[in-house]
Length: 223
Image (tube, rainbow, N blue to C red; front, side):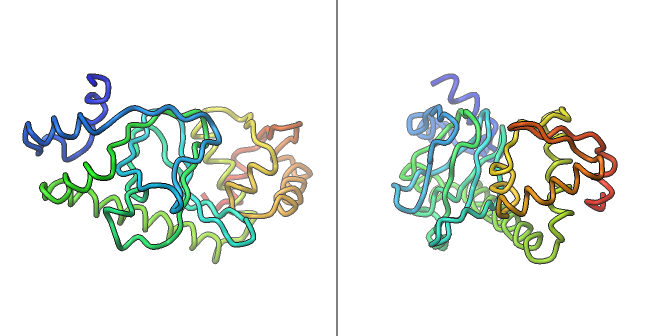
């Protein structure tokens, strides 16, 4: 429990809780380890409650009737998520999915406890709606990119952000994986990567993309 508490203490409303509320939160929270590819949540699953990413990465996406995934946003270490608490925020009525994008470790406060906590603590409730608003903003940014940004700019921006995130110019990403992340078809990604390669911006390897001119990608991305 001590390890769980150490992570819960990072929640912005933790200091405002009473000792009773903290003990209640600790008893109803647990660490979960999720291998890459684990489906953590969908509307067909039971309401999870509050999720806090300790390590790894989690992807939130929509699934079309045809089976196409539209990535809404990703969460990294230290990021909380409340979209998995749809039974607490009853205004959430769209079908989101949550999957472990990498081997991940999470702290999960179960839905019943999180609901009781937000009912009793104005600070926890403010946190709940602030996180919901941030999630909505992330979704709107994704939709804005899909609707109004040229694909070459989106792909270049993604490659630059991955280099910055990983600290490496060699990205272990397949074309299918990239397509999943930038919300496009694999064939479209393959054509654009070929153009980037012919322009000397990237080098294509099996299961990997090596960025050879990150400044050139930044110019395309408008950065």
